[in-house]
Length: 181
Image (cartoon, rainbow, N blue to C red; front, side, top):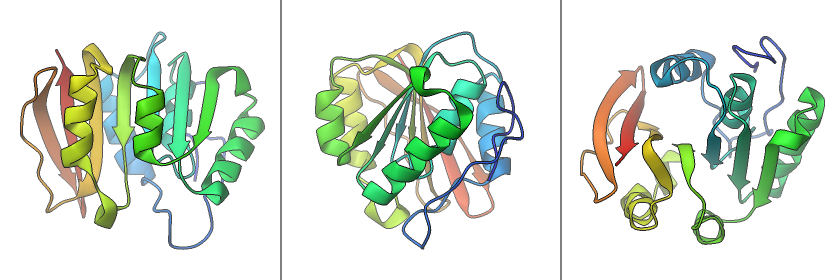
């Protein structure tokens, strides 16, 4: 696995071993970041269900000023910290080893420019998490929530502070975009 563009372009990063983590494919990550604008000048990124941390590290590489990584797996968190150390971007990263609900509660006062949600497909709680993000206004106006899911999954409901924007299918993966109001 590698960082695709930006400051750390082409740098290799590790992924946790085994079948518990399913890293986002490079071509999907490239398509997502291109649709978000390609390169950025600051902003905060939340990589929920971070796995290897590839999405949050891609965000920092492309100009986001800070990424917060959340994963409940100690093995995944160890790999994320190693990847951060390898890229020497410790000052731009926060890593939380906790479940999604605990992390969201801890971060509920923060506002993010982008939240990337890539839970294990069989364990998705998007129907609970999207309303929580809206109710706590965790996405800045104009900010985005990006959901990676199985292509069969659809999320089109609008919320008070989030509205469905679009989705795109890449092979077996569906990427759904919400925008903050």
